[in-house]
Amino acid sequence: MEVKGEPSGEAILFDALILRPLGLAATAIGTAGAVLTAPWAANTCEWDLVEKKLIREPADYTFCRPLGDIDY
View 1 (cartoon, rainbow, N blue to C red):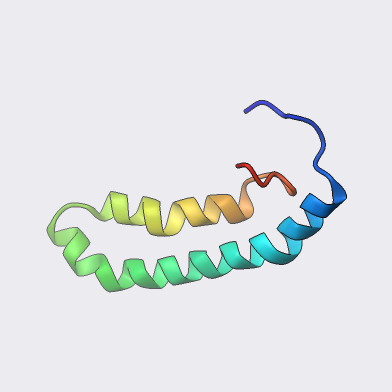
View 2 (cartoon, rainbow, N blue to C red):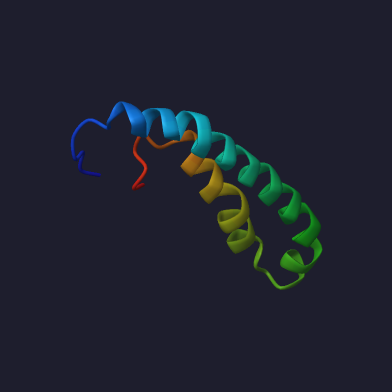
């Protein structure tokens, strides 16, 4: 991934105060949704897709991207 420069202070604050908590909530809700849909996902062999979309992508957005990188 190519770095486009340092993020502004406003972007870092917006990310830390708004986007990260929303990402954490999305990860928690996605995990609960994955647990609820697990029987159907396992039955249709789609658990990998459910895990990727409901758990891994929100967790990566919340915990793996650089602070202030809003265009992740």
